[in-house]
Image (cartoon, rainbow, N blue to C red):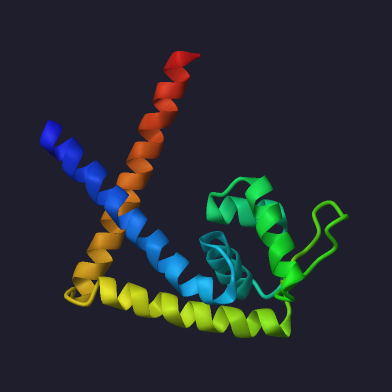
Length: 149
């Protein structure tokens, strides 16, 4: 039992750390941080724009971190939004679209590199397995919270 816990926990931790290192390496050329990768990614996927709250929910980052990230992206000319307006819609600028196209292409390369030895079927099974584990652990955590109350 303990070995499964350690294997699972350390595998997920190592994977997360490697992803963060890759994000840092790829984004530092732009003078930005890993959080900007995910902001750019989701803004690129939602051309109609998103609010800071929506970005926070999509990236699993707290709203204050998203606000700081967006401020920096706005200073660099990557996004447009009214920072003084509540629930302002954030959109990529033309420069932001160029930036995110580079970042998304590099993200695709990283994902391909990580799954190079997988067949399409194996890759699909892997991601489905991660989704199931995630959902099961979320339900388990919610039960723990209910029992505490």
